[in-house]
Length: 175
Image (cartoon, rainbow, N blue to C red; front, side, top):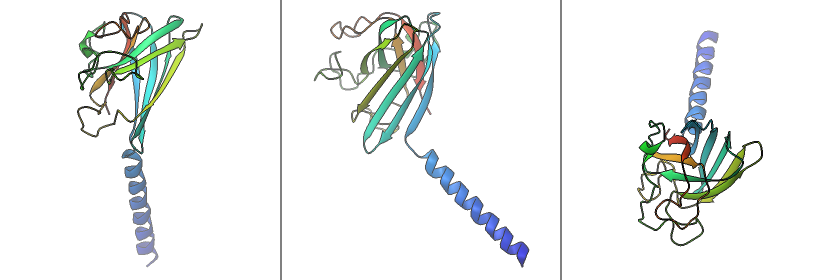
């Protein structure tokens, strides 16, 4: 009888463990790593967390030239080209003009600029309800896109890209 009870107890723990693992796996959180492009030496990570209809995006990069750099979401989750051109243009599913995130006219991929310190380290955070992670809405879903860091700042006026220069880091936004 003790063996049966222990077996049931072990099975109960196993089921509990699987349920906990499943609920953690279904959380809308995505961590990705950047690849250096154009021989830049830039590396880093990005995190997307979706909670209550809001996505919080944070990118942390190193190896940048000190100063201001642009970061954008691009059309394709393809970082195979040495210059990251394989990621395509800016993600713009609503067919708006390029601009600042806070302007009425902006691409869904127009995240903006951030500053790298004297050591080449930079961080940017954005919180928005204009994105989702894996929801299937073509105008909001960031999955299957590319995340690009540029060598220069976005000027927010040059169409369609903001004149942000070379692509120095790339990551596919995939699970």
